[in-house]
Length: 537
Image (cartoon, rainbow, N blue to C red; front, top):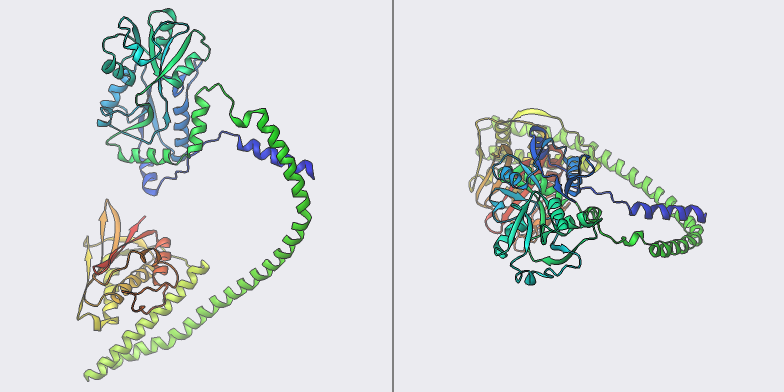
């Protein structure tokens, strides 16, 4: 028994030491549509180790190459790569808009004129490189005292601009890239070279003739740059980067930073103490195992019995609600029909008023019963929606007409109307459940509006449908807003009385909105009314 447990624990630790990195980002439907329709261009500067470089005449590799693959796995991007052997040409292409994405790159004020930058991917400080045992300067302050020194640099690098602004008295010698700068330093053609620490570490890992001596207080953030007019592309890149945890990003950076120390989980002492701890835990688990197994068996039997009782109770509840609803709806239909006949048969105003009152309350009772049935079905996951093409204007007109019959007494003080963005709008939805969702929101508005207006309608925002129900009623206190969609939640105005209702109306709206493909939002100011929004996803 001890051996299998130790093997399991050992396997868990081995898995934990793996460097698999991924992003939690999942594209929205709108983003997926954009990705499917668009192809873009990524610029590559293949002389920038450890971020993007060619090693041993193979394909491009590096930290940002791996990062791009992580993003590709999450998005399914389609793009082509354009290679630029010259950094200055690389930047000019980005400034001219010839490439859509550029990485890695340091954000600067000038570059922000044409690029948007993601969150920082890596912090890589700049360092000064000089020959070993050299009497050359040992710091930036010391460097200013040596006007005769030759500084190797790459044109249009961020650090080169920094040098021109800070040490313009020195002689700057330009080379094609970091590698040729290092070679020039080795040959004695240059005295000083400045670049990023991880890049320098890559070139010096097998070079004992050069050393780094000083960090430079300059911007050292590396990000991904996206053309400013590519807002959706930038949004996707930003979300994908932000979806990578700090720990995973640190793993990725450590993998490519060529550090010369062992991580703690690869040190002998770590595994020695871990093994001893695992052995102790295994013995403790063996001691507890028999006692716990008996207790677990007993509790499992109790839970199974309770589960069976709960399932039976739920089936009985669902069957009861379904049966009783049909039993109640049959006489209600008769009441509705005879009430309408009475109103038509007799011209006496009193009889017509009584008939209309009966009819309005009967409609309201029917609506309450429907709500309870839908609530029960939502709770048990038994709601099945259809998908029909309906005219949204006609559908809303029918809801308005139905409510005018149900609340005739309120129409003298409340202006109830509809506002449509178009003369007609065809919507794929379930008309029954969509009407129910609107009716519950309208009923809520009438409940909290003594006078003013209740307006339903829709508009298109960036070609996306937004349905709204707006009132000028009492509004909702900010403290109660987070609770309004909770089951059986009722709230009061001024804490003096609770409003009538089942307490599940907005809960049903939330459930139906999810099933019909809408996101629900609410804005409310106490004393100035409330607006519910249904945004098509």
